[in-house]
Length: 247
Image (tube, rainbow, N blue to C red; front, side, top):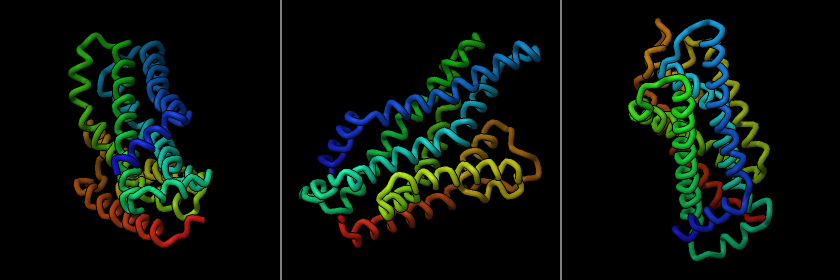
């Protein structure tokens, strides 16, 4: 399995997709910078760490992360099918289940790496407007960043299943677009928003920073939704990988 992970990381190095993903995670700090500047200069309001962190995280989880992480998942699971290299991969003395697990662990490490990068960039954006310790803000909100990042990762087996089944990049990205649409619909319909699992990270952020809408159902059982979904689709991906021919 470690051999497969090493090959996957070598594949990352040869591809420009990591650079594209890094550019994508710059979107939230940029929007946060513009929004906070306008708020201070035009409205005369004072910047606060909670506002900066909340805006950056909401942009990430409503749009940037679903699309970026789905693109990474599609690349790591579909690219060999597109190039025909899957035949060489399956000649390794490793069964298909181990290959799937190795690819998933590689995806998890990559996703959490971008979670860390994004969090640092948002904190650095905040230092432009605030003189208080950025370290305290980093420590306060980093667990939330990790938790919501893991929630995004828990949705990836859906993308993996679609990618392995179709063996094409487009359907996983369309699915990511559906996730984004559902998340935005949840904002317009907050009474059912917490029940729409692609929107769960957004509502967890609101709950953590005490911006949760009044009168809306609690989301204290988020993992009860996500963990079963993760394993159901992950096992389905196992079955698809085992049953389908290489060609």
